[in-house]
Structures are given as C-alpha cells and as structure tokens.
Length: 253
Image 1 (tube, one colour):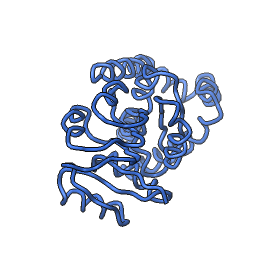
Image 2 (cartoon, rainbow, N blue to C red):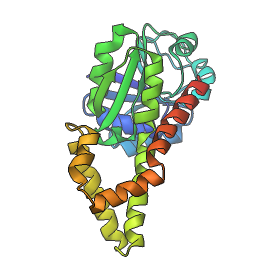
Image 3 (cartoon, rainbow, N blue to C red):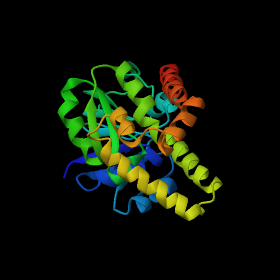
Image 4 (cartoon, one colour):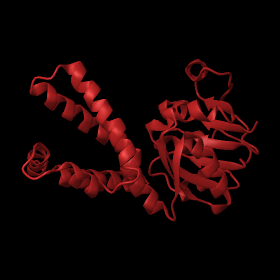
C-alpha cells in the first residue's frame, strides 16, 4: 500500500486522512508528539508518527497541511528531496512552495471540510507531471477539478474552500427564521437538514435559475420570500463574499 506523509496534524489534515486511510498508508509529521498521538487516536487507525526536526522527506509523497505563514520555518526542518508535494495551503503559490521545499514536482490543492465524509470539492493545479496522481489521491475524498492556473484555484478557494462557512451561515439563518415564526428548534433543524440534502442532489443536474423558477409560482410563498432576499441584497452579498475571499487569498500569496 502506498504511503502518504502528512506534514501537519490539524483539522484539515485529519479531515483528509479520514478517507485516504482506506486506500493509503498514513504517516504524520508534526512538532508535538502528544498532538500526533491525538491525531492517530482521532483517525482510529495506526499511523507512523515523526517529529519535524531532521525528518528525511526523501522519495516521499507529502501532503502539506500547515499554516501558510509557517512554510519557511517548517521547510527548514527537513532534509532530503521529496518525490511529490501536495499543498492544501490557501494563497501559498507554487513558486513559494518550490523555493522552500525540495521536491521533484508540486501541486496546489484546495479541499474543503466535507473531505471527512468523502464529499469534498477539491480544486487542483500545478505540475502536470502530478496531474493524474493528484486526481487519483483527492478523488478519495470527493469530487476533483484540475484547473489551468493558480488564479483560477484562488477563485475556487473563495467558492468551494470557504463555501461551507457561507452555507452554514445561510442554514442557521433559515432555521432561525422558522423558529421566529413559531416552529420548534428541533423541527426547524431537521427541516433545514432535509432541505440541504435534497438540494445538494438536485443542483448536480439542474441550473440554479431553473430550480428557482420551478419552485416560484406567481404570487406564491416562494416569490414573497425571494423578494425579501433580494431586498436584503443576499445575491450581492454572496458575490461580494467571493470577491473578498479571493482578495484575501491573493494577499496571503
């Protein structure tokens, strides 16, 4: 079984490893052995654990999951040349990764939190030498999309990478609205979850505008609620959210 080496042991690393452990042997490298043991316990499978200082990355396939501002400090701790580097760091360019990590090939990826349940939307770009392998690895955690440029990946980061937070806000607000009108909290939450589950299936094959038109009958409840959303500039706010998240991704670079 092929080995994947996680550099970093935070929430994103754990979310990705939860599904990859089914097809790959996992090892993890971090700064604190107690935290590495906690990672192993949370993953619920045996993993090889190593401290960063002096770790030899020679011929290894690395999945980089540290904070973007720690790239310089972390890379200085390793020795050897890796076979491949798959970075999940927002806004960290290929040039910066190649400057600080010795590796034969490098790609940037942007999974999201749904990786832990095998439903991530992962955008990927970088050295085409790794294209097929990157798509193979990250398809284990959900859908994948190879993009032609880092600009496209940063935009996709603003959409799919940050998107779970936006949708969580909308989900909570819709449930709160139902509670405000008198629906019990547990019923509001159950209804909201069912809504999102069904919508997630529908949106795979139907354009959003067509879904909206199919639900909105003349003078009906949906039309009234939709008009309220437009008055609140929800559409403009969503577009602005992508703008700001993309700007932040560029600023991190």
